[in-house]
Length: 178
Image (cartoon, rainbow, N blue to C red; front, side, top):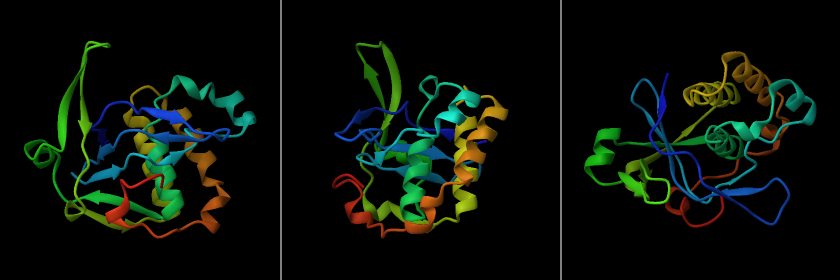
Protein backbone atom coordinates (compact mmCIF):
# COMPACT_ATOMS: atom_id res chain seq x y z
CA UNK A 1 0.00 0.00 0.00
CA UNK A 2 1.19 3.51 -0.79
CA UNK A 3 1.66 6.39 1.62
CA UNK A 4 1.04 10.08 1.97
CA UNK A 5 4.25 12.07 1.84
CA UNK A 6 2.70 15.27 3.18
CA UNK A 7 0.91 16.09 6.43
CA UNK A 8 -2.81 16.12 7.10
CA UNK A 9 -4.75 18.51 4.93
CA UNK A 10 -5.39 22.11 5.85
CA UNK A 11 -8.56 23.48 4.29
CA UNK A 12 -10.60 26.63 4.51
CA UNK A 13 -14.35 26.82 4.11
CA UNK A 14 -15.50 29.08 1.29
CA UNK A 15 -18.81 30.90 0.88
CA UNK A 16 -20.84 27.90 -0.20
CA UNK A 17 -22.32 25.14 1.91
CA UNK A 18 -20.14 22.01 1.80
CA UNK A 19 -17.37 23.78 -0.15
CA UNK A 20 -13.77 24.01 0.96
CA UNK A 21 -10.45 24.90 -0.64
CA UNK A 22 -7.17 23.13 0.10
CA UNK A 23 -4.37 25.29 1.41
CA UNK A 24 -1.44 22.94 0.84
CA UNK A 25 -0.05 20.73 -1.90
CA UNK A 26 -0.63 17.05 -1.24
CA UNK A 27 1.69 14.24 -2.31
CA UNK A 28 0.87 10.53 -2.36
CA UNK A 29 3.38 7.83 -3.30
CA UNK A 30 2.13 4.49 -4.66
CA UNK A 31 3.92 1.18 -4.05
CA UNK A 32 5.50 1.35 -7.51
CA UNK A 33 7.16 4.70 -6.66
CA UNK A 34 4.74 6.87 -8.69
CA UNK A 35 4.16 10.18 -6.88
CA UNK A 36 0.84 11.94 -7.41
CA UNK A 37 0.27 15.65 -6.73
CA UNK A 38 -2.96 17.27 -5.69
CA UNK A 39 -2.24 21.01 -5.86
CA UNK A 40 -3.23 23.63 -3.32
CA UNK A 41 -6.30 25.77 -3.98
CA UNK A 42 -8.39 22.80 -5.10
CA UNK A 43 -12.08 23.18 -4.40
CA UNK A 44 -13.35 20.15 -2.48
CA UNK A 45 -16.29 18.88 -0.48
CA UNK A 46 -14.18 16.91 2.04
CA UNK A 47 -16.04 13.58 1.92
CA UNK A 48 -19.56 14.80 1.38
CA UNK A 49 -21.88 11.83 1.19
CA UNK A 50 -25.59 11.13 1.74
CA UNK A 51 -26.82 11.22 5.34
CA UNK A 52 -28.13 7.67 5.08
CA UNK A 53 -24.60 6.46 4.34
CA UNK A 54 -23.30 8.47 7.30
CA UNK A 55 -25.55 6.44 9.59
CA UNK A 56 -23.76 3.28 8.43
CA UNK A 57 -20.17 4.51 8.09
CA UNK A 58 -20.03 6.97 10.97
CA UNK A 59 -19.11 10.62 11.33
CA UNK A 60 -16.73 11.62 8.55
CA UNK A 61 -15.14 14.34 10.69
CA UNK A 62 -13.20 11.70 12.61
CA UNK A 63 -11.28 10.67 9.48
CA UNK A 64 -8.35 12.09 7.55
CA UNK A 65 -9.82 13.99 4.58
CA UNK A 66 -6.70 13.79 2.39
CA UNK A 67 -8.05 10.93 0.19
CA UNK A 68 -11.05 13.03 -0.82
CA UNK A 69 -8.89 15.73 -2.42
CA UNK A 70 -7.16 13.65 -5.15
CA UNK A 71 -10.48 11.90 -5.72
CA UNK A 72 -12.21 15.26 -6.28
CA UNK A 73 -9.47 16.34 -8.71
CA UNK A 74 -9.74 13.09 -10.67
CA UNK A 75 -13.54 13.26 -10.77
CA UNK A 76 -13.47 16.83 -12.05
CA UNK A 77 -10.78 16.34 -14.72
CA UNK A 78 -10.65 12.54 -15.30
CA UNK A 79 -6.91 13.00 -14.92
CA UNK A 80 -4.26 12.90 -12.25
CA UNK A 81 -1.04 14.87 -11.91
CA UNK A 82 2.09 12.73 -11.78
CA UNK A 83 5.40 14.05 -10.46
CA UNK A 84 8.26 12.86 -12.66
CA UNK A 85 10.67 12.99 -9.70
CA UNK A 86 11.02 10.36 -6.99
CA UNK A 87 10.24 11.23 -3.39
CA UNK A 88 13.98 11.33 -2.66
CA UNK A 89 14.58 13.70 -5.59
CA UNK A 90 11.78 15.93 -4.29
CA UNK A 91 13.57 16.10 -0.93
CA UNK A 92 16.98 16.66 -2.55
CA UNK A 93 15.64 19.53 -4.68
CA UNK A 94 13.83 21.10 -1.70
CA UNK A 95 10.25 20.70 -2.96
CA UNK A 96 9.41 18.23 -0.18
CA UNK A 97 10.77 19.48 3.10
CA UNK A 98 10.37 19.19 6.83
CA UNK A 99 8.42 21.90 8.59
CA UNK A 100 8.37 22.55 12.33
CA UNK A 101 5.09 23.79 13.77
CA UNK A 102 5.91 25.69 17.00
CA UNK A 103 2.28 25.62 18.15
CA UNK A 104 1.79 21.86 17.78
CA UNK A 105 5.45 21.06 18.51
CA UNK A 106 5.46 18.73 15.53
CA UNK A 107 7.68 18.17 12.53
CA UNK A 108 5.99 17.11 9.32
CA UNK A 109 6.57 17.24 5.57
CA UNK A 110 5.17 19.98 3.35
CA UNK A 111 5.36 20.29 -0.43
CA UNK A 112 6.28 23.56 -2.09
CA UNK A 113 5.03 24.23 -5.62
CA UNK A 114 6.70 21.83 -8.06
CA UNK A 115 7.48 23.41 -11.45
CA UNK A 116 5.42 22.17 -14.42
CA UNK A 117 8.58 20.72 -16.02
CA UNK A 118 8.50 18.00 -13.32
CA UNK A 119 4.80 17.22 -13.77
CA UNK A 120 2.79 15.20 -16.25
CA UNK A 121 -0.90 14.52 -16.74
CA UNK A 122 -2.29 11.01 -16.90
CA UNK A 123 -5.87 10.10 -17.81
CA UNK A 124 -7.69 7.93 -15.28
CA UNK A 125 -10.78 5.78 -15.62
CA UNK A 126 -13.64 6.01 -13.14
CA UNK A 127 -12.71 2.55 -11.86
CA UNK A 128 -9.06 3.52 -11.23
CA UNK A 129 -10.10 6.80 -9.63
CA UNK A 130 -12.33 5.00 -7.13
CA UNK A 131 -9.82 2.20 -6.44
CA UNK A 132 -7.07 4.75 -5.78
CA UNK A 133 -9.46 6.56 -3.43
CA UNK A 134 -9.93 3.36 -1.40
CA UNK A 135 -6.17 2.74 -1.33
CA UNK A 136 -5.58 6.25 0.02
CA UNK A 137 -8.28 5.83 2.66
CA UNK A 138 -6.58 2.66 3.90
CA UNK A 139 -3.17 4.37 3.79
CA UNK A 140 -4.33 6.90 6.40
CA UNK A 141 -4.31 4.04 8.90
CA UNK A 142 -7.39 5.21 10.75
CA UNK A 143 -10.22 3.66 8.70
CA UNK A 144 -11.22 0.01 8.95
CA UNK A 145 -11.16 -2.02 5.75
CA UNK A 146 -14.95 -2.58 5.71
CA UNK A 147 -15.56 1.15 6.12
CA UNK A 148 -13.12 1.98 3.29
CA UNK A 149 -15.05 -0.53 1.18
CA UNK A 150 -18.29 1.29 1.97
CA UNK A 151 -16.76 4.62 0.90
CA UNK A 152 -15.44 2.97 -2.27
CA UNK A 153 -18.93 1.61 -2.99
CA UNK A 154 -20.46 5.02 -2.37
CA UNK A 155 -18.26 6.87 -4.84
CA UNK A 156 -18.97 4.21 -7.46
CA UNK A 157 -22.44 5.76 -7.83
CA UNK A 158 -21.14 9.32 -8.31
CA UNK A 159 -23.01 10.27 -11.48
CA UNK A 160 -21.24 13.64 -11.82
CA UNK A 161 -18.40 11.75 -13.57
CA UNK A 162 -20.64 11.72 -16.66
CA UNK A 163 -20.69 15.51 -17.11
CA UNK A 164 -17.22 16.43 -15.89
CA UNK A 165 -13.84 16.02 -17.56
CA UNK A 166 -12.50 19.56 -17.87
CA UNK A 167 -9.09 20.38 -19.33
CA UNK A 168 -6.19 20.57 -16.90
CA UNK A 169 -3.30 22.97 -17.59
CA UNK A 170 -0.08 22.22 -15.70
CA UNK A 171 1.02 25.85 -16.02
CA UNK A 172 -2.05 26.97 -14.04
CA UNK A 173 -2.35 24.32 -11.33
CA UNK A 174 -1.33 26.73 -8.55
CA UNK A 175 -3.00 29.80 -10.01
CA UNK A 176 -6.38 29.67 -8.32
CA UNK A 177 -9.25 27.47 -7.34
CA UNK A 178 -9.37 24.45 -9.63
